[in-house]
Length: 195
Image 1 (cartoon, one colour):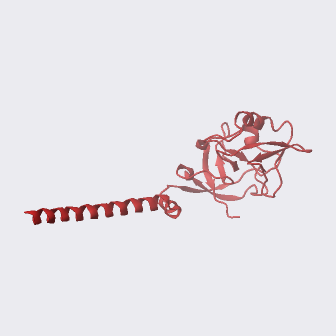
Image 2 (image 1 turned 135 degrees about the vertical axis):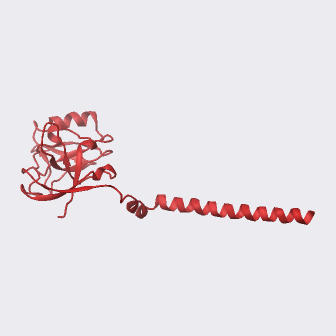
Image 3 (image 1 turned 180 degrees about the vertical axis):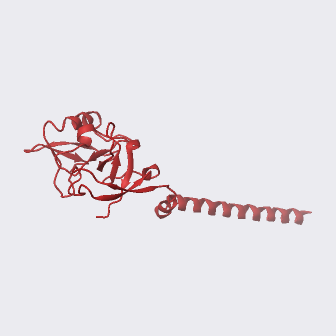
């Protein structure tokens, strides 16, 4: 009787040990895949994106894009991807039938402001002066910074779901200098940049 009881206890202990080893392995595998960046980037490949060729209209993105230039737009891209600083996007501006093409120049959590210079005001994000594609600073006149001043006063740090959109013209265009920060829901597509 005593030997049988010991034998049963040893089998039970083996089963418990095997269970603990398997449970530990499962936890380690889960931890690895949930914290491994390479795995995460391949995990989100099922994002349904509609690719369309669109024509740039106007000069607000010149010289980065010329008017009449064709670009590929990835519609619904941001349904499962983050909007990143320096992305080129198509934005649905209220009251305008055409989508606007602009740069994302600041994202949620960025600290931003204006810096007065001899020639006007520069836009500063995270203590760095914003530059266009030709490495020239965006330079706003006294009258053209009014909209940005209102937003900066209320939001010295870009709030969640808000973005600063700018064209490539250093003196502003139909962009955040005219209408302020924008929400993600009106960012319709990411533009594929091959330059």
